[in-house]
Image 1 (cartoon, rainbow over the protein chains, first blue to last red):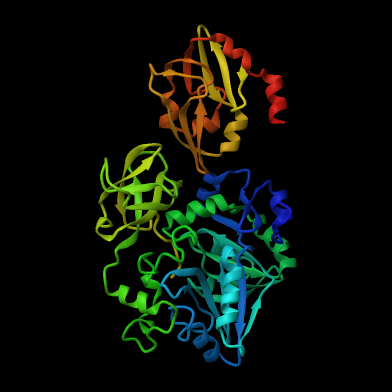
Image 2 (image 1 turned 180 degrees about the vertical axis):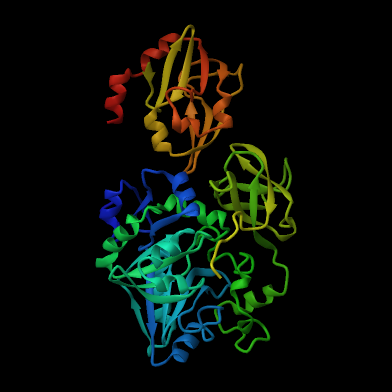
Length: 373
Length: 119
């Protein structure tokens, strides 16, 4: 594991008894001694601290906001120009074929755009931005740690350190001072719970994490529970539920394409794959991402082929994420199916160890979001 | 008590052998969420995959450690898979096998050898 990167919190993970695994080129904690199940349930009940420093953090700046935002709109189908200072949006880089090259969060910080991208995609994403954004813009990959604090107790934990944390709504971003440490915080996350994502200078990541962990409500949470939390929340994992072969419409991410970028909007199109994606917004795609509840107790994981019938026939789709949902108390999954099989309550079959077992299609999420809107 | 390299424990109970997984295996698996046991009356061969065990992390198989007939299975761990983490070397046994060749027990480690094996 010598060529793997380590985050600034690496030593703290070991001290906390984490089991470390390679993930997207980093040695990351998959779980702590409490284990995935307890970590998951603790996050939904109180607050969990996640090291997400492997993700890429990029600051794009130029002479003014309009220059930065209008340039970024050539890469994403989101309304960037209309983003108010101190606000964040979910978005994605699209490909000329209408697929998704990565999903991301972008926030306006004054005249600059702060972008958080997936660890496994960050080199490609940065190359893509450098190649396709005007040379007049500055694209800085920031050397900063990223800590997520997720769960219903998050607000009280942060507000005790800086009362301004409590004034933030979902998707607000602002600078906070936590126990003397300057951070950039957003009220967001990827667990379906209220919470914050906190960008901090690498040298101050461990003192900040220790300070947060001092709180009785906060426990460290590994990648294992991060995955089951986001799966229950119905959120896509890049490289699994979405990739260059899935369009945003097929993936159920149409909500993230604002009207102003759609056909008839003031800034319609103008991003890669718009000629494929925009018509899909007003049509019925051949396939769609859908929630799937296995009717038995056996978890059905990524790759399980899905059939429309108990016997015979070719697969009609497959599971892209699946496992045990600790809050649901049973197996949960999502995957792609022909759109006519996606109506809630439709029965399909997943082939597991040579047997076809029933699943029923269900609206996402499995666990309702608990955001502070 | 004997132990396999697959982290099963085997305990003699009269003519039968009770089989379960070790504390070490349960800890490595993580939270167990699903167990599928063989049917009582099944004739099994040594090294045949006869149990499916799924944790929050992954699916794994458990192999028949001996030739013989499955004479009893522990339905309690099917209903409450978490018992496998709570008491793997006690209450959460998996199945009882009537061995057709008891000499196969000689292939397996004693407790001291197993402790060395898991380091």
